[in-house]
Length: 126
Image 1 (cartoon, rainbow, N blue to C red):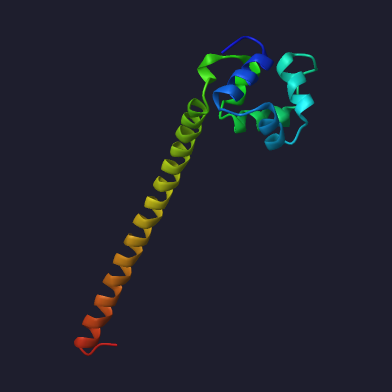
Image 2: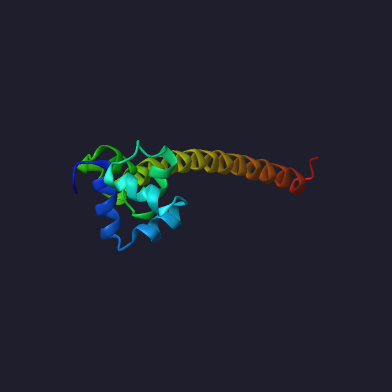
C-alpha cells in the first residue's frame, strides 16, 4: 500500500471491493468528505471516522494512520488482542483452579468430619 493516509484508505477500500458511496454510507460521512480524505484535500479525518473506515475495510487502524506494515492487516491486531485475552483467560483459569482446589480440601475435611460423627453414632457415643 502507498504512503499517504488517503492513498492507504483508497487502496484498502478498492481491495475490499467498495465504492466511495458504499464506504461513505457505511461509516456515516458524505461521499464528498470521503473523496476529500482519499485525495488529501482535507485535514486529517476525525479519530472515530478513521476507526470506522478501518473496521469497514478490515485494516488495522494503526496501519491506516501510520503506514506501519507490521500493523497491515486487522489479523495482526487480532493476534495481539487474542494473545492478551489468552493471558487474562489463563490467569482467570489459574484463579478458578485455586478456588476449586480449596473447595476440594473443604469437601474432604467435611467428609472426614461426617465419618467421625457416623463412627461415634455407630459406637453409641453422642
